[in-house]
Image 1: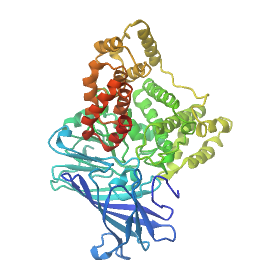
Image 2 (image 1 turned 45 degrees about the vertical axis):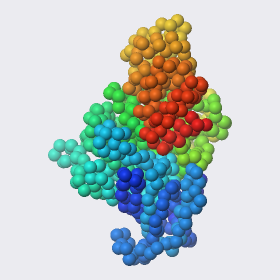
Image 3 (image 1 turned 90 degrees about the vertical axis):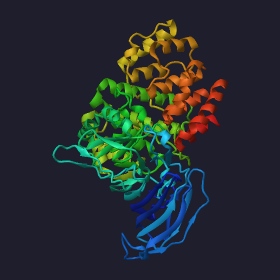
Length: 610
């Protein structure tokens, strides 16, 4: 890779190979400060290192004097000239450093309280209500808001960090946090709280910047298996451990299919409800939303998805955000294979059908170029959401089609070879296409045609020959929903439906229903006030579009309590479709905004203030 239009970095000239962080967390000021020391590999002549930043205050830049090496004392460093460019609203500012091709460059800096990649929570916003909380979200290009770094997935580096924080808090990062296993009983033991507020972590495997992650709060550990466990606030930890109890089995299944897990441990950190995503695949430490902890394991596909990223995304990475389908498309495919192996074929088919329905629905408002699997990328947008979801979904469908054509006996070894060949590397779509032809198409001629491959990779929309997943249980749900809409007869047995069946029922229902219909469903099934965020997302969207005022209080409570973008943005959109709803949307957003992550705030603002 020579250039990523979402980064100012120049990796063709110089790359970071290792990053040393010294960080101090100031909760009162909502500021992270310290140093970032880059170990550099130079590829050619030049005297400039360019790092990505956003709203960082740079205090000093120094270069290691030749021969001083790591751990040099202050006199082993010399000041370097630097400049910060005029900031772009999305990309931030290029930090240009004049060097003599120093082997190491150290940047002293502090973040802004408004850093887009960090959220600082007051104690009242946590489950315990006694201590503050802070967490990061670096994907897609938010790492630059809390670390001066080459913020592109095409650059991978190992890292280590020393972090100081208030002594009552636990600090965790996307790294080896010191968790060990006792040989006697294989019971994972978390690192002890020394009470000093001093923490050291180390990530030996090279990762891209968007997988840098940090969190600090009142956190306790619950073991799941020999290599896995849950971190959460004390009020959530045991519930989460029960919900995610199948994690170790998921790991074993994926290893049997696609090769060894190469990251040591796999722990899950359950964050407060303001976390903007379902999960974030930070290596060794998935960050997860509490909205999937509902007591019946019906939403654990989120864990399967984030675990799958340990192979597709974390191990083999897109080299720019233009090729996000390589991360997310492959991950969605692997996720479905995990779900099938652990929870059964019917569950997996229902999940696939839901994804495919979402893909088809998303096609209508998109241009032909946006319907290609290789999407146009972020277009200088750090908050990539909306249309960019199509490429990953189409990519997953493409891989499932290849599996069906070649059979699993052929396709599974091919995919395992893909992960082995490109392990710990960043690649693009052309790299994958070449590997596909060499290792699958040429080895098994006549199974698929070049025209079919082109239809998937280069042409808009879903190919006409693509077969959709068919769920027998969904066929029953569709029949019952149509009967209810026609006759008013409530679906028999719906009180025993799974989350997936309810999603099918609501997703394919009209966006607007009569008040009597909504009242009937609510009276029988108690959808208003549901603890299931996925059902709530669709139910409150219909409530909002239908101006069903009896549910407005619970709708407002849901939007205020939950900050996950996938769940709240559709409800705001539905509210904005009516005059009465627009007024409510403005009021709710004003109340909820202080508790939203900056990423969620930006997404909702585009809906409410557009």
